[in-house]
Length: 48
Image (cartoon, rainbow, N blue to C red; front, top):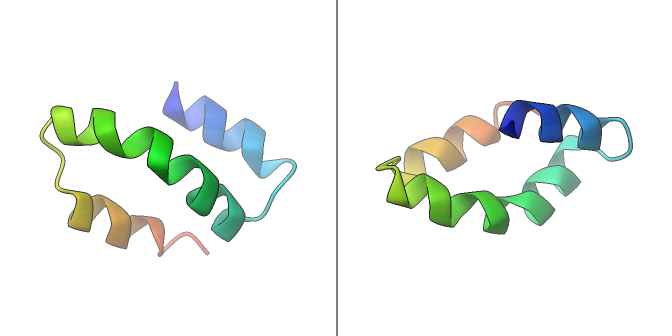
């Protein structure tokens, strides 16, 4: 579901804008699932 949302948002915005807007929405569920925020954040910056 996250991939579909990012794919859809990528049609209208650049990668940096998507990260800045959607990161606060994805961070709390990711932390609850045990994903380290530093690792997930550093992998996001490899997109652009």
